[in-house]
Amino acid sequence: MKVRLEYIDKHIAKIVLNRPQCKNAVDFDVIKQLDTKLDELAVNKDVSLIIIQGTGGAFCSGGDLDEFHELITSAQAKEMLFPMCNVLKKIVGLKAVTISYLDGPAIGGGAELASATDYSLARDTVKVGFVQAKLSISTGWGGASLLQKRVGYHDALKMLTSAKVFHLDELIELKFIHGIAQNDQEVLDWANEWLKHHQLLKTYKRNLFPEDEKQRLYANMHQEAERCAELWESDAHHEAVKLFQSSKKQ
Image 1: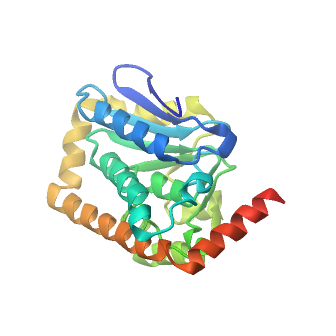
Image 2: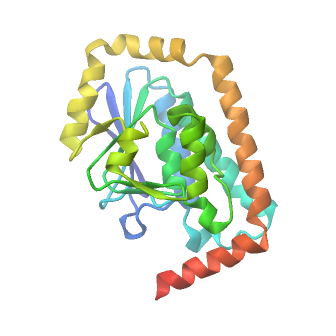
C-alpha cells in the first residue's frame, strides 16, 4: 500500500505515506488511498489525535511529476488538483486534532499537505519549501490559504513568493513548526499531552474553528486549485517541468 493507516491505540491513529523510493511523492493512487482512509477516520468517534508522516526519512516531495507531467491542459490538471485539494479539506475538517511529523523534506505539495494539519513537529533535518514558483505555477491544493492561516499574511507571502527552502530554526521562528521530535516516540510523547482531556479536544476544536470560517477557507482553497490549473497549461510551466526532469537524470 502506498498509504497505510495504523492505530496506535484507541485514541491515536497514524497515516503513513509509503513511497520512500520517490520521497513519498503524491500520485493518483496516493490521492485515492488518502481519501479513503480519511473517510474512515472521519466517522471514528474514538480517535482524538491523528499523525501524518512519511517513510524513508522524508515527509512528502509533493506531486509525482513523473506521472503528472502528462497532464497538459487546465482541464487535465484539475483532475489531479481538485481531488487532492479535497483531501486537504478533509484533513482540515477532521474533528480529531492532527499533527504532521516532518522527519525530512516537505517540498512543494508536501509543504501544502503539512499545512493542512493543526500542528507540525519536525526533526532537526527538516526542510520545508513552497517551491511551486520554480515550476511557474502557484500552490494547487490549497496550501497558500492554509499557510496564511498558520503563519499570517506577510510571512506566508514571503514563503510562497521566495520559493525558498526553509530549515528548522527559520521554521520555528515563522511558527510553521510547533515542536521538535527526533523519532516516533517523541512524537507520541508530545501528542500524549493532548490526551489528558481527549474528550474535550473535539469540542474545543469546533469552538476555535467554527463552521462558517471553515467554509470560507474551503472556498479559498478551491480558488487556488482553479488558479493553479490556469497556470498549469502555460508554456512556462511545461518548460520548467522539462528542465526539472532533465536535472534529475543528470
